[in-house]
Amino acid sequence: MGWEIIERDVLLQEVIDSPEFKDWSDKLYETTEDNREVFLEKSKVATFLIGERVKKLIRQSLNPHIFYDGTNLQRETREPILELNKEGWQINAIYFDLPIDVIIERALEAKRSREGKFNEGAFRSLHLMTQMLNPPTEEEGFREIKVIRENREASIELRNQIKKK
Image (cartoon, rainbow, N blue to C red; front, side, top):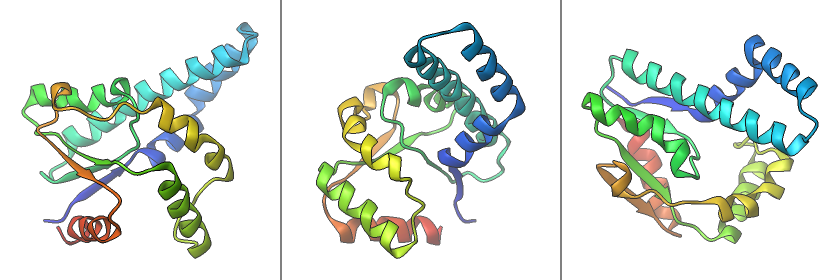
């Protein structure tokens, strides 16, 4: 049986496109004047809803091999997935420990090759994201953390292993 892949970006789009989230968001804009506060609140709610959807998809899956593809920069965004440890799931992490220039280079390469759907606005956010990063730790509840460093061959090999399973 191959790997089932759950993509955070797909779930995020589903959440922000949902009528419930749009209605709630519109009401928030009506009652809050500070756009920064609105952004932070929307981010918290979206993160919560994504976490709930991920847990539901994992619990409903018949596949014991699930790969959750999500950039969870902070411990708080990883907590909902790690709650599944209490239900007997074994959660591992793959952490890409790459310098920002390598990340930007790869994003540009993906954009040029048309493989990646890389949003122009995301380029501006990359530096901020690296500042927000809290690397995963075993203390959070990960069974194992595989660290990928600046080694293109290892990254390609890992991607191929996941596709084969």
